[in-house]
Image (tube, rainbow, N blue to C red; front, side, top):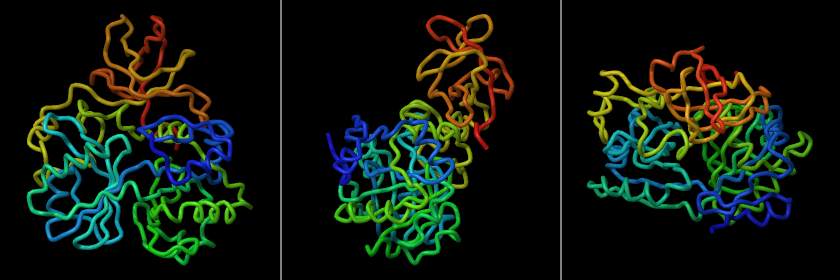
Amino acid sequence: MKNTALTDKHISLGAKMVPFAGYNMPVQYEGINAEHAAVRNAVGVFDVSHMGEFILKGENALNLIQRVTSNDAAKLYDGKVQYSCLPNEDGGIVDDLLVYKIDEKTYMLVVNASNIDKDWNWIQKYNTESVEMHNISDKTSLLAIQGPKAAEALQSLTDIDLASMEYYTFKKGTFAGVDNVVVSATGYTGAGGFEIYFDNDHADQIWDAIFEAGKALNIKPIGLGARDTLRLEMGFCLYGNDIDDTTSPIEAGLGWITKFSKTFTNSEALLAQKEAGIVNKLIGFEMIDRGIARHDYEIVDADGNVIGRVTSGTQSPTLQKAIGMGYVTKAFAKEGSEIFILIRNQKIKAKVVKFPFTK
């Protein structure tokens, strides 16, 4: 089991630690609902240093990225971030990721913790033009400072004008007295905020500085439990649950990051799928009857016929109702459709709703 540079800090704060993607990670501190509310209403800090970071450098770095990712990275400018995915050769997804354009010949890819080796090997397989690749995952720390008060909490620590940063852009600068920190206006909560990348050696210094600077705003440490409820309220996919090696980006509602203006891995088959029309679709649903849908529960129609399966489900702390995501046959994917979740062999009524669950 790997630790992040801040594991001891989490333990000293009384975090409940759990194994996650091969790392010892904090799942909660004072409780998921309280931590969820802190991020939605104010500001909270997640240690997400388990995520993977690759640097791709050279004349052909963009060519390689264009070949292996579904989105059009040619549209990126220096300091811009793009959400994308790595399609596999069978219609599924190797991983979803972020692409950072540092300059004309340098890019950073941010991948999911559980897929670091898999993604590295996948990209390396297509690296036929000698692109320089560096896996900096083990030496890089990543903090996500999320919530409507994030800019206010952090501004005293940097000369970068945080409030003026556009969504999905980043800047490099000095942060909490540390040089060469990447400050990115991104996140996985829908609550606004920033993600900050830096060398492990500075982890304690930066963590302490953030909590000191945000003290007046009641800044709080947040675990992976609230990260999951926050992303689910926004309808953001979680790799391994809502998307995986068997799910198509078109079926997953990721057509917006699947650009057929270029050729990429399996693009021909995905275009054919898009043109022919999908069979299954990822939908959001709210429970009408009492019950919480869990990963892999069956979704059925009124007659009990299986029409799909749940990929994620929880009790929404914001809405105070049970919500979920899952794949259903297209006939049941329309907003307002009545569906049922099989919970302990009981048909529990739900209805299809639009993403995001919370506005």
